[in-house]
Length: 84
Image (cartoon, rainbow, N blue to C red; front, side, top):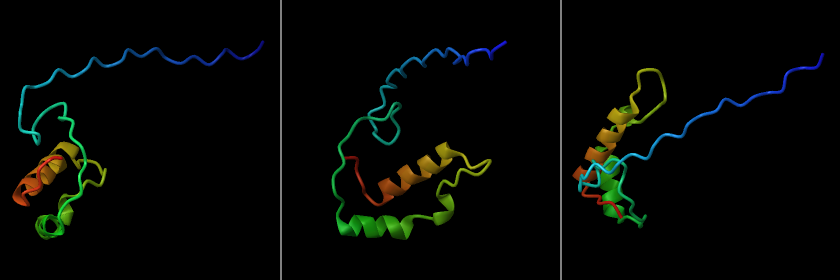
């Protein structure tokens, strides 16, 4: 007899995340839409001085993305980088 046809498991899509009502763009879930704009060189330099490379996300076990994102957002605030 022939092989059984390959079946794709049926998956129900995740429902959309309701807005949290947070107005701080660094804390809102889902993230608030904002456009990308070029940064001033001084802000980029300030961010680079503050940023700790050990806090970069590596994907290794126990490397929690939420913790890394929180550190990234805090560094952006310290460098006075605002969304869009």
